Amino acid sequence: DGGITQSPKYLFRKEGQNVTLSCEQNLNHDAMYWYRQDPGQGLRLIYYSQIVNDFQKGDIAEGYSVSREKKESFPLTVTSAQKNPTAFYLCASSIWPSGGGNEQFFGPGTRLTVL
Amino acid sequence: DAKTTQPNSMESNEEEPVHLPCNHSTISGTDYIHWYRQLPSQGPEYVIHGLTSNVNNRMASLAIAEDRKSSTLILHRATLRDAAVYYCILVLLFGNEKLTFGTGTRLTIIP
Picture (cartoon, each protein chain N blue to C red):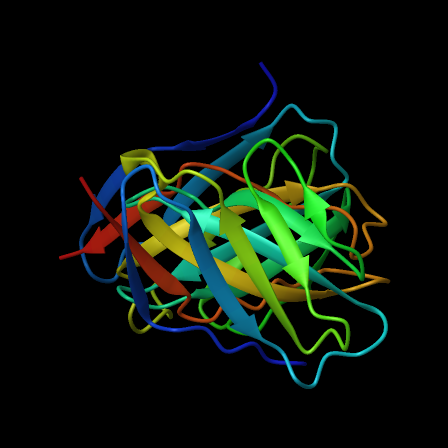
């Protein structure tokens, strides 16, 4: 079955440590996205990538980094510079160029807790 | 970005139709209306989208006002599995690198 996988589902880290969240898709989509969701809030865009080896900052990119070495993979690193990293992280993908007529497909999410 | 306004919460009885409203008075001619829903502790799931005409799919129907300033997501026969947060989002015709999610409508289904 085609889809998006994120791992792990739950992640605990100590304050000051960098942590990398995995996102893989087998939908052959060009575009991939990372969102952050805080309790009771909507999603906010962290980074997105339209093509391999290229990515753009979203609204809240500070303290995060990404890479896009393969079409299928878009890992997100939460660095120690991110002041409040505890959140639910969602990865998504879509056809590109997408336009308003195409939907984004979301993974199951990773819940990161920094102790 | 054009914004949408939704009620914070709604309740509906199981097996009855549900009408979820969304206001988007500043919508532009090139904005599509998308609906997503999110079950607890899961990623959002696409439900339906439309531009001007009403749309139907296996999950729901989307009724769009003639002036496009409002729309309604219709679940024809709610089940307990439909309990979720429903988001109404405007997406540009060209380029949707960002989906701007508000806080959505939390739908509770009463058995």
